Length: 98
Image (tube, rainbow, N blue to C red; front, side, top):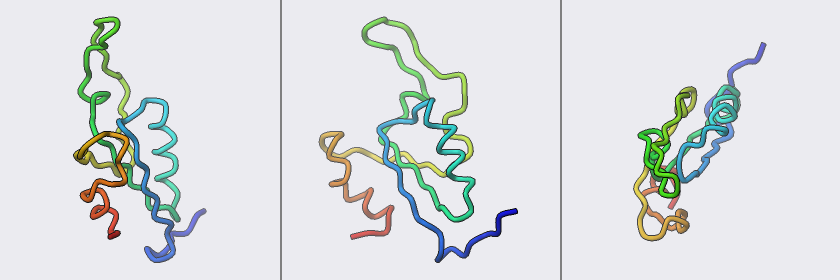
């Protein structure tokens, strides 16, 4: 049986992803169960949670499996272009960095 680690000995892991992804959810849930890892998942938008209409097919898409269960997550605003995520000062403050 695993023994809990002190907060100081835990690995702090921040995972940045554009949106919750159905095939990553089980992996993130599994990683968050590790006693020596403090996982926080940051997303910029939740289309996959709310559902949306695919532009090409015109079909409404929404996953029927929970994408956020089992791990810590937070939606943060995007400033500027999406791929300049590390430059977002709000994200840096959430990580406790400067």
